[in-house]
Length: 220
Image (cartoon, rainbow, N blue to C red; front, side):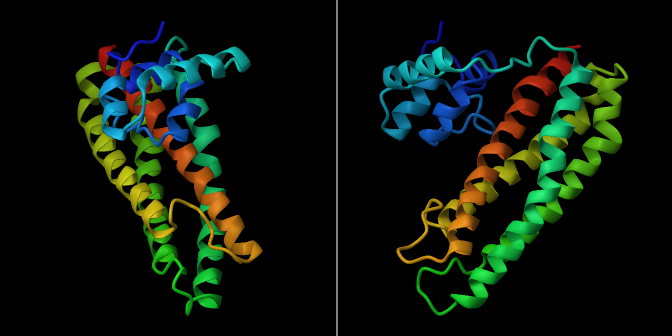
């Protein structure tokens, strides 16, 4: 049962299909996962009852995996294969496409100037972030270290997640919410489609760590 007093992170954890609805309405369930659903909807000018109805409809059509009851090493493995590996594949291609668009269409007022540089910065920071998780935090969690022993590295990772979230906001600003201008070339359209996918997957990625993996590991 979903109600507006529950947090976005809780709803996304217990009702995984809700992430599709949250993305549709641009409700931040990862870095902003601590906000109550009703409060977030009110701020966004959305009817919370409508959002809940849409979540229930998504659940009726699609059964999504829940990760709040699976062993922590299994959650870690899923994050590595579902999110870390694809990020390393997708980001270089997006950077190259952004450079091409800026180079060819730089004289147009709709050109997303600075997009390639932002994506390069995101790539550098995400690579450093994932490296720390893969080399230190995730092996510790998989080995059974919980509670205070991993409090500091988790705190650092969550702070960095906030930075990633800020970059996503900047991406939307530069690209007019990933809507290509009229007459955009195939590369430009594909770039914005890829950026929308990047946003969705990075938000799901951060949600799974912030609202599922890290709280469970800290609680032991």
